[in-house]
Image (tube, rainbow, N blue to C red; front, top):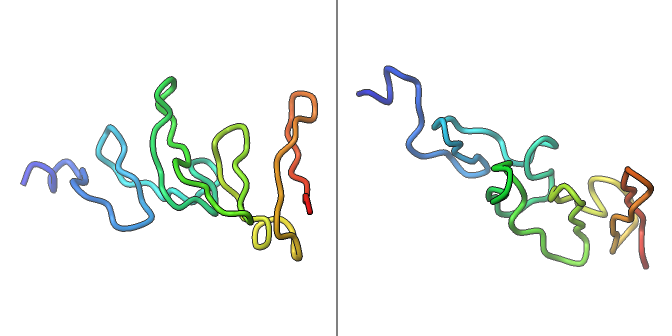
Length: 96
């Protein structure tokens, strides 16, 4: 009953991640794991929610540990992509 009164979660549904303050957030959001992330986790240094599983030739993990799909999120016909450093920024490029 305490959880209901304080509006806190014990378990989140699939695609959501439970935070330290016991709320559920949508993991595939740009702010968290990225739109193509399969599994989420926490960065051990700063505690941010990150993508813990970004595998597959059509997915790319950026420097902030967010996962994107080469075909669906950024390019129409790209099978393989990667992020490259562009000064203080990063840029996603299609790599054949």
